Length: 595
Ligand code: PEP
Ligand code: MG
Image (cartoon, rainbow, N blue to C red):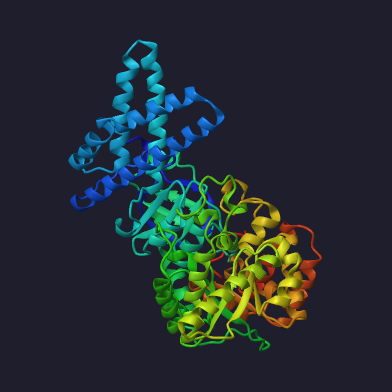
């Protein structure tokens, strides 16, 4: 091994989730131009072949669809070329032979497919006639199409990788992060991915440190080395020296005992030094998090991201299946309010049932927009939520509302769901509270309308930042612009609070800034009544609430509302936080946006 490979290498990335991890690397997903290779066991062969067949089927469908379009355009030559593609896709080499190879090699479909296609291409390219050269291009085209469809369904399970692995992945999707177990995944390190991407939110909710924007070329050479991930600063250290290693081991111990101390204070109330009570609730994606909400003394669930029931499945769950989940959630919270948000599918969460190929999924058919186009799916969910309301206190919340007309439409579907349940003679709470998420600037600006028509509002700052500043929340290249401390965002929050107060309804913040203690005093000073964050962060936020008082919070908010740049606001928040909680090991005071 070359000497430099043994040296300690420090790479600076973007800190996404706080915490420190030490472990061995595990290469998970590969960048688009690389092909994953992993073994499968005997029992998985059938499913792997089916996965390949589905990709092949989807590819043929796509080609047929293209042919139809060409027919409409009168481009008959193109239709014939695509006929050849369909013919190749029926060739035994990429049907029967390929399936046999999966059985024989016990390797994943992508790897076997790539191997066979390389062979196929080589054969054609050695032939000198022009027609065969052209055929090579067809084969490449088909290869790319099938591989793309295959990769969409590729799934290396994060559930059974070696303990304490540092997972290196090109990018992460929410369902992958959801599958990760903290005992096995010590940390995530990716090339791409933003701070409030849904995968990041899930990693944070599990307490898994995460650093993105890492140049993988430097990493590959060190596959067997030890790796340290510092999620507070965004540093990834490969081949640490003895001194670095023991310093980080000590820090890890300190962090754990600091957290333990905070966690032991679950029975303390979330109130400021001058006795102002704050409602501190939890954002929940999975049922199993309920226990943690209880342990940390959460006042309820401020956001249940219901879409996690279905993002990794091919179909929407039935009313009964959904009802069982919601009911368990409600019973688990033992009378405390549970805010169930209707499906927020689309954007980076995806979903195989969504319209495919939208050029701008975040600005497209997402969340309530999708549900209003699919009233049966919507009504099914509303029936399931209403049924669960008979078992405790349920609040219903609609995501990504851009204008009050959508709320009117949503209420019509809700009325239909009520009528259907009445007809069926099913019990449900007649006075369920209805709220909207304010996460699009148009909704914030017209929040007076929403406040009149809702029982509560909840500000989703993750999207509010994205849509106000026109920065994709998952795009790390643009992350320097994604800043919740931007004056426009702070002023929009204030605007919503004023309208909520005028109409006598509560307003919460459920975006990631609610989990960042550096924002706590400001949010209270702006008049936010409730903070909802991942259960794991309840103790940290509670600590920040207990360390501040409402008078200085209001003064801070007033001061910040006069500021004109995100940088200035960020500095001021850091200073305030440093003075109130001087020994927070978890937060790098240098960067407000790093959680
Ligand atoms: C938000 O946008 O702030 C929010 C809480 O919703 P999500 O992160 O699920 O889009
Ligand atoms: Mg949102």
